[in-house]
Length: 111
View 1 (cartoon, rainbow, N blue to C red):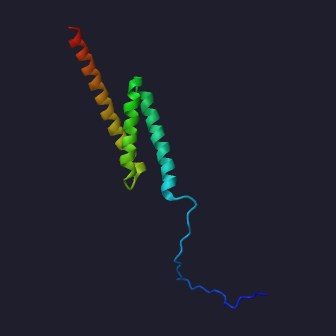
View 2: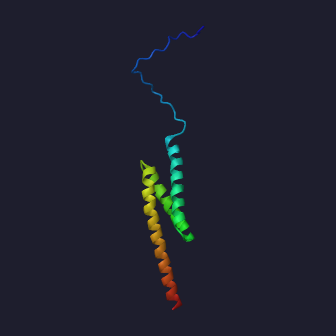
């Protein structure tokens, strides 16, 4: 027997509740996991294409910079690949330029 003196709850079709159910995992946390997988996959592909081991650090730096910029947008998973490609190309150009300057300076010192 029910000891409560409260009437049974009845809800009309338009009844709304103030409380919303809490998701199992926050959306941003799920997105972060997917984002890290995407970053790791794209970085691994780019490092495999780069034949010189000295490009490892600049490409990782480019991935981290692109990730930081993409993460503050509304669609980081969509923005990151393009940003990373742009940053990686810039890093490769800079590495080639530095190698050329280094080679030229060695020739000047040797002469």
